[in-house]
Length: 358
Image 1 (cartoon, rainbow, N blue to C red):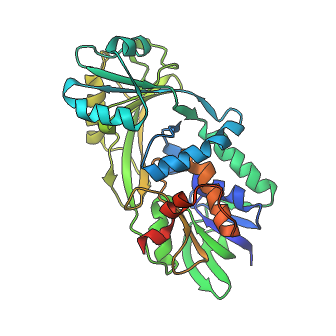
Image 2: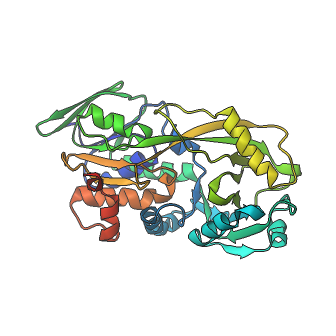
Image 3: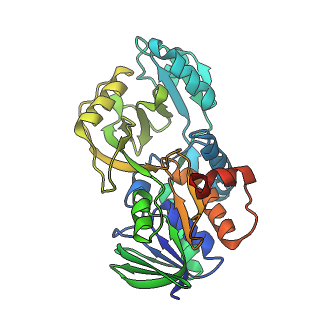
């Protein structure tokens, strides 16, 4: 065997798993693109917001926090602000409670983000528990950890064939043919395609496009201290980034797996929703892009051995939570593969297991 563990996918899921599994045996990671984290991981909003997502996702995010705290420089203060019009009170109240915001006055919100339009914004909430994630620092840290124990991580290695062997797997790729005892499917939007290639029943993952635009700092303001802002139901968001703002319509459009790009019309609609809440219009875009956020049918990550083939391991369905759950998700994967009791709550392990799909 070339490796104990063959990992398909070089995003945050695959790379963090490589770091954890390198303690258990030899690791070989295969990434299709010429660089790691090219797709969803490279197009993330890069926020650690532990209250974001379904209860199981929140549990995994909470379990990741100690690891983040132990990694110097990975987290930095950002905060969140929820703003709503007068006719969105019900949705505002829901998000305020679900994401543990404190309600503040519109004047208090303007003191933090001076471009908010008081003629339109009727309600505001603020939270300090959200933090920026230095995604490159986190990725490189996991990658260094994996390589320090001899793990190999190959780019330009698109998988074209997978064959089950008596004692493992044979994977054919653009970088060569490799064998491994266990196959870890961390292929992002392509996880079901990888499963089919391996003769494994797909679980019904759906990649969803999300478009984004970078705009100049509104009105020449210093936006570095502004929180990430969004509307009720997350129908748009704006986040400071390197002296500019990233604005997204926060759409979820089901797509086939591909190298995604922004939809101009959807982007324009999202920018209009943002503009309605502020006093500064958008006059130009610096750039735009899109990513695919891939969800299981219940929108909860899938982490565990396949029900019918235990040498095939799912590490999939990160959706928009890949970075913020990666420390605990990768640790859980290693615990399950090693056959040791997971550190996280047993009930949470069950909620994440692929066996829930039967």
